[in-house]
Length: 127
Image 1 (tube, rainbow, N blue to C red):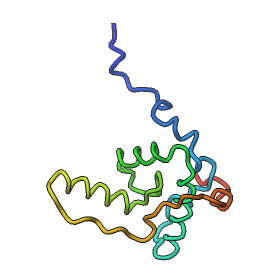
Image 2: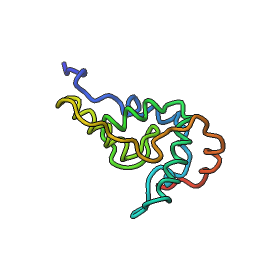
Image 3: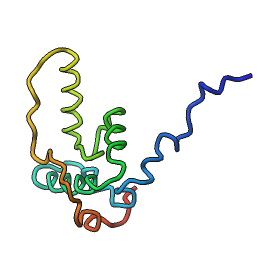
């Protein structure tokens, strides 16, 4: 008889939290930058994405996922690409020994109220 304990779990067991995400039916362009986006434009887009994340019921699961699989792009669980990279570097330093703190960058704060953020980004899905 086959040992089914070694079979992969159904994908829905891993991704089910996404069904309850605040970003589920929003335009993905809010969370993932277009090619060559820089400066104030990027800061504004990330701030808007983080406002959506601030009111999301699955923000922690999303953040844990992004950190665990090292999502390379986008805002996940209220963290930008740069912030996730800093967290990974910081965890490597803590394993290796004491090191300098990574300074906070602009837009690191996650606002408490997502007022109007969801309405501002409603639009067609980008796939």
